[in-house]
Amino acid sequence: MLQLTKWLRRALWRTLKTPLSAAVWGVSLAAFFTSFGTQAATHYSVVTPAYSISGTVTGSRATVTLSASTSGTKLTTTTNPQGSYSFSSLPSGSYVVTAAQAGYSFSPASRQVTISGASVANVNFTAALVTYSISGTVSGSAAKLTLSGASSATVAANGVYTFSGLANGSYVVTPSQAGRTFSPASRPVTISGANVTSVNFTAATSTYSISGTVTGSAAKLTLSGASSATVAANGVYTFSGLANGSYVVTATQAGRTFSPASRPVTVSGSNVSSVNFAAAPPTYSISGTVTGSAATVTLSGASSGTTTVATAGGTYTFSGLANGLYVASASQAGYSFSPAVASATVNSANVTGVNFSATVLPPVVSLSWNASASPNISGYRVYRAYVSGGPYTLITAALVFGTSYADNTVAARMTYYYVTTAVDNINNQSLYSNEAVASVPAR
Image (cartoon, rainbow, N blue to C red; front, top):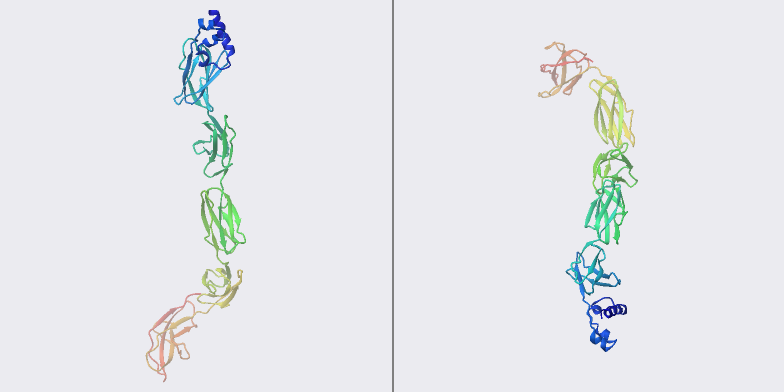
């Protein structure tokens, strides 16, 4: 009887084409025996015990595979929402259980299970998400790298960066740093089951420009002494390739002045425009010398002004003059000048050599008085003395018809005393006026 049962089990294993399941080992063998005769079915009936293997998978909705160690037959199932799985109707024997899901690793990778007359539970697995990294370098900058807006990393001193713990998927890596530009500006990266390296960037300093116009002149523009640009024919200038910082722009041209003379400019992350200048019309000068005396030189015409020549043989200059006709004259008490006046025409050029020569005048005492209130006054006589109170000597041969007189018969370093009288139309003369004193200085 025992030998027959063993033979039947071997025959059934060879004959059935389906995998191991409850359909094989959980049925009565009576039907099989029936095919060999009614007698065998009547006296022999064999039922093989069936068992199960079960467990849980935490961290993943995995596919669990059961492999029979002897036959290589496989069964698969998927964990339920709670992570549990079970294989049932299994005969005693050795099995291998594995869990799998794309993008996950499992601990342990697989489990050897032996059924020996009882079901086996707690064949458990723990899933972990498989992660990868994106790495590269940034040359020329310690930039901040941003990954798809969700994660960031700062480049180390050696220029290397790494994003780790990343799942499969599509990402964009973007570098940034104030005052710098990057090539490329960003890079798309796809992780597909492997780390991605050499996602590299090159940094360059951001540069900006200062620009403006100069009206009325093709001036030279100087930038903080370090760079220069000449204004084009249309009056426009530009300084480019500038880093953030403070600058001073200055306009210059021979014979021209500018408003303003210079302008401070701060570049801070953007171009600076409209740094404009206006050139004043060109101006010129008139200059010369005065010999023989110090003098005051006066200029009149399109512009006017005065200047002082401090010593004989000194020079004078009138500057800032527009084109036009001018008249210059020199004056100094006790001197006459030749020429008395000098004309000069400024025509887009400086005028030089407008010179004057001084000659000493004889000393003179200038007198003036109030008119007499008496009627019929014909004129006045002037008297002079060397001591106060007289005697006085008449120094005017004819009547003086006005109320002033210049005595040019005096000598230097002398003091004189003067009185006047009024004379009417019948030659009657008044008494002396009050006395006036004059001291003639040395020459």
